[in-house]
Length: 427
Image (cartoon, rainbow, N blue to C red; front, side):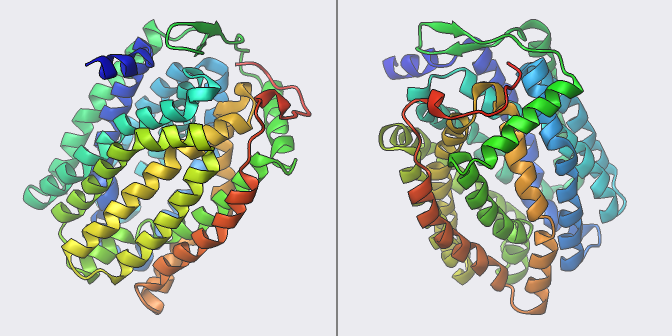
């Protein structure tokens, strides 16, 4: 009990409510997300059309991600999350009523708008509630709690889709998301104010005041980020390694359930159980890996995670039954536990505090531009050559990225040592 109380003291009441909303919303998302390629096949799409769908869908976040991160920096994390939740409500309605797979693109558009506000705000808000010397631990605890969405969502979605059909799955998911949206709107109304930075469990340091959104501020903030990315420092190498990995993983993201269902004959329910199993492993290890990131440095955890992910891909493509596939997903969970908190902590330290929301959005967007055709290429390789081929490439990419991360992901002891050439607006 004392340990639980100590952990809860690290999380202010607003952060506890914030995490509750994130969990409810993402249980809803994880009910359908691992099965979305199979749902598109249910609506009449073949493998190449599924690849085309996710290629077009990848364009949509690029239109909103930087803007959403900047808005989060300008108006506050809670307000940005509330706006994103309202937009995301339409995603479930459109998927539920879609008469063909093409209509799913409209649902992906509303989902992209919602995520562009929520995703940068999530990581930035947690960074604001922690000090630099315990940030990896805070991210680890937060990600451990958040991992419950992967434990509950996929098996529930798989069971409902197998037993009652995809329509019932989307109806139940929409119910969860509605609860999350109500909570988030309530928080934006009652709790959103000038942010506070938690330096210890008992003391707080006031953060700089926000400036109102304007084109001039957006231009200044983006300019500061571009200078930081071009400086050759840690932020530059995060962008490069993340790009190498994401280009390859974007080729296979939509192919995981298709490979398991079509090639190994694993059911929707079993796919959900495998995702849940991976999340359980992530939850069990995340607090330790966050501590490891703080004590040994982020690069140790990141490199170890890359190696684990690479090995797990080999196990995945050689699996021919549920038991061996379980081993692959356990390894996926271990890799996610190692890399998740460490990457978030590294990014939050590599950029000035006033640009965190923009940074989390910009990293996703800049990588997404390069990786844009990857889903279609992956589907083409799957159908034209061998279903295993697209999964081999990410394993190789991770091995290439490991020595880069080991040498370049070294943070100076004080964040003030990171130069910022262009003054940026405060939070």
